[in-house]
Every structure is written in C-alpha cells, then in structure tokens.
Amino acid sequence: MTITPIKVLAVASGGGHWEQLMLLRPTLAQYDIRFATTDPAVAAKHGITDAERLPDCNQNKPLQSALCALVALRIVFRHRPQVVISTGAAPGFFCILAGRLIGARTLWIDSVANGEELSMCGKLSKRFANQCWTQWEHLAGPDQPRYHGAVL
Image (cartoon, rainbow, N blue to C red; front, side, top):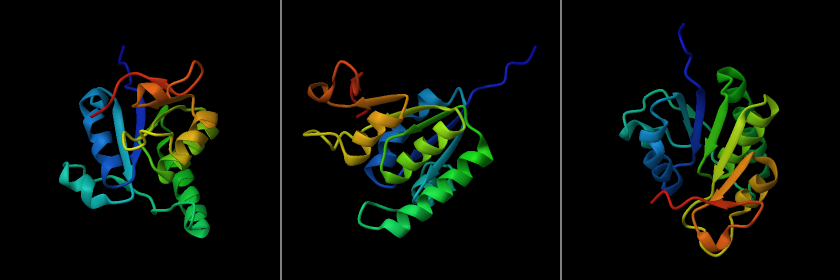
C-alpha cells in the first residue's frame, strides 16, 4: 500500500515573511509541498524554481488586492492542497481564504516583526484560519492566537 504524502501549499510575501517560511522548510520537507510568493526571485535563491507567483498587495491597493485574491483562488484550485500555511502578508491571507473554500486545513503564523499587536492579516486570520499562531507569547490568548515559540 502506497501512502500519498499530504499536499501543502506554503505561502509568503517576499522579504522577512519569506525568510521565516524558509526556516520552516526542513519541517515541511516530508510533505508534497508547493510554494507561492510575490517574488519568485527570492524563491529561486533557495533553489525553488517552480514557485507560484502572487501579485503583491495591501489594504491601500484594493484593485491589486482583488486581483491577488483571484490569483490565490486559481492557485489553490489548481493544486488542491490539503493544508495551506502562511507567514504573511496579504497574499498569504488570500490563500488561507481560498484554502478554506476547498476544505483545506489552514495555519497562519504571524510575523515576528509584529511584537506589539497582530498584523491586520493576523487579526483576520484569527477569524478565518483553522489555526492562528503568534511568535510573541504576550500576544497569545486562550482561544487564538496560540504561541508555540518563534520561528526565528
């Protein structure tokens, strides 16, 4: 009997979000993993040549955000992951939402840069993701987000 590995979509914007996701890469190696990012060049620096590209967006760019949401939906529908993980930012949140639409388990890990409060997407993910984690113990709550340590 052949066991099919769990399909995981790991998503992060470029920069620090991507670097934090790459710190999780050894843990994710046991899964059938696909990556998506706003900057394929950062993926290529880590030897990932087939990363899906998401448009960069934020709350100040509503049209770009709508486009990103559609691209996220297309990526999730194409790969049909069983799990979607994101370390941020908005493009990762849109993949979390799309993952929920297909019944995937979803995990949001808020950036370590957000030490005073959750990011806006972290606050939204607290409501929509199956799990929302913070990298700061003092931001954890009895419900969500949860603290399991820092990625860095």
